[in-house]
Amino acid sequence: MIIGLTGSIASGKSTVANMLKEYGLPIVDADLVARQVVEPGTETLQKIADAFGQDVLTADGAMDRAKVGSIIFHDESKRKVLNDIIHPAIRSEMLRQRDEHVANGEKTVIMDIPLLFESKLQHYVEKILVVSVSEETQLKRLIERNQLSDEEAKARISSQLPLSIKEQGADAVINNNGSIEETKQQLDDILKNWNVL
Image (cartoon, rainbow, N blue to C red; front, side):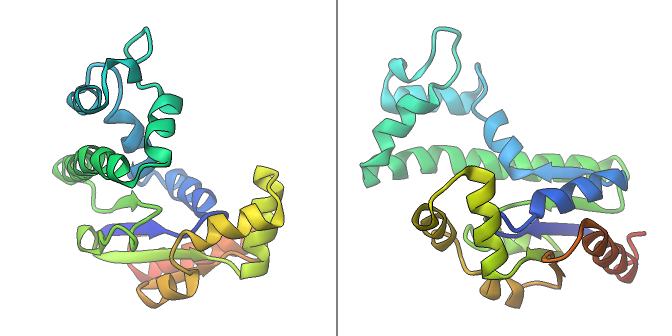
């Protein structure tokens, strides 16, 4: 079974991902893949350098994230160019890792995709697990974690689909407003229900 794990910023998805790791379940992490596909020497990084110039590379051949960020930040067309290079690379690498786990005999693979719904990747998975919190909890955690103002935190939250909409597309929802123990109990129940444990 391929399980898609998603949530929103400060919903506690990483906490749940770590719990899934403790069960020994293989995880394809979209954020990690996003870094892997632009490592020095990769075809994707070469395409970025071809599109934006060699000066987006550091002396040791890595991507200069700050420089790329400053190029795309105020320019929608350049951001699209970057996304058109990176997103297909991320998707194909995620699928490669997923299929490799399956080929190695894994019965369950977790695909940790923060923007699962926003990127319309539901067809990559068979079940969707959404980690959700109340708006108040989400805002409070984000402000504390990232040292943001109320306005900055609200802007980041509103850049993603509301959790209420993600919940509607979920096969199961973990309510992460309580303690770690409560979250783990919900995860256990869901995995047993899905015959993973």
